[in-house]
Each structure stands twice: as C-alpha cells, then as structure tokens.
Image (cartoon, rainbow, N blue to C red; front, side, top):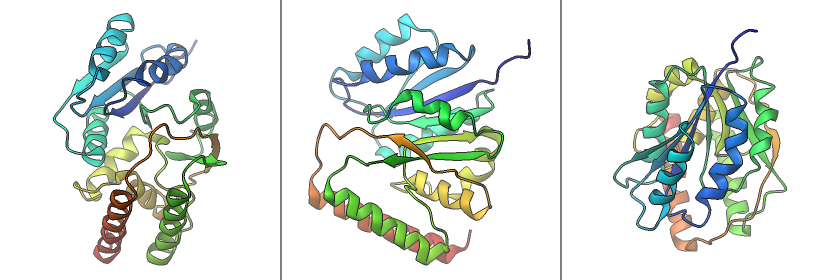
Length: 234
C-alpha cells in the first residue's frame, strides 16, 4: 500500500478554555486517518485554562503539540505557526481556528481537491456572523476586486489547505506585521492563477461578540495594508 500523504494542522489559540477541548477532539479522528499527521496549537499566552487543557490533550494524543508564545496578536501568531509548519516534513498544511466555528469533517471536501490546486479555501455557507462583520466582509471583497482585479469570496476564511512547498514560496511576500495574513496569502494564490475552489463549508455563530469600534478600527488598518500591498506590486 502506498504511504498516505500527511498534513499538519495549524491552530492559533487565545483564551478558548470553553471550546478548545471540543474543537481539538473534533479533529482527532480525522488526523488518525492520516498516520503521521499532527495538530500544532499556537497559544498566544492565554490567561485562562486554555493552555492546561491543551497540555492534557497532548498527553492523551501524541500528535497534538502545544507551542506557547508571547501574545502578539492573531496575525503574528498565525504567521509564526505557518513558519513552524514549513519546518515540518508534511506535504500539506491545513489552517483553522480554535473557536470551533467550523465543521471538521468539511476538511475532506478540500482534501479531495488537493491534486487540482496547491491552495484551496473554504467559503462560509450561510455565514453566521453579525451584520457588521457581514458588511465588512462585503467591503473587503469589493476592495480586493478594485485593487487587484480579483474576485475572491471569503478571502480571510481560516479553513484552508495549502501545499507546503507553495506556502514556502509566498509566505515571505506578505507584510510580517499584517493583522490578516490569510487575506494576503489568498490574493497571492489568486494572482498566481491557482484555482481556490471556494468550497462551501458549514459555519457556526460566534460565541462572543467583539467591540464594534475595535472591529472597525481593525478593518480600517486592514484596508490600508491592502492599499500599500497593491502599491508595492509584490
């Protein structure tokens, strides 16, 4: 029997003590079907019981790894995780979040398409977000279309499968301090002509809201980052 391809799952985490066990356990059976695959959880210095729960899971499952680092924000934590993944031997890198907003079994939808593209993303079907987030998502899609002439649905979705060799080729092209590295990676993949597929995946509502002012400040920063990125013509 030919050896199965393996993947490493990158999962940034911060103060997810109420959901981390359920989220990780939802991935355990999937990872077991790909012997040698791993779950790498990047904890950005949680100040609740998240890290303790991850440690317990890592003792139970040897393929669950905890990386504890100082809190630098989601964007930098995610890039840190991607760089660790590039040091692994796995052919594929899958990225999702620790908050359990997605159905883990939808992973197979992306995995089945891996021979047709090195960069595949999901698309939140019937997205269960606040009206503010939905408005911002629409504005981001329009902004990307204007700046890069690329129509991308759900460019920031944390549910994506990337060939390690391709991520290695493009990761250093994105701003290292960006708040939304996944958007930039998606734009680069679209610009390179790869079929993103935009596979519909189930989305669950968020458990906690976010300060609207902070949300829009982050969005404004993101819009400016995209403008500068377009001007650089990377």
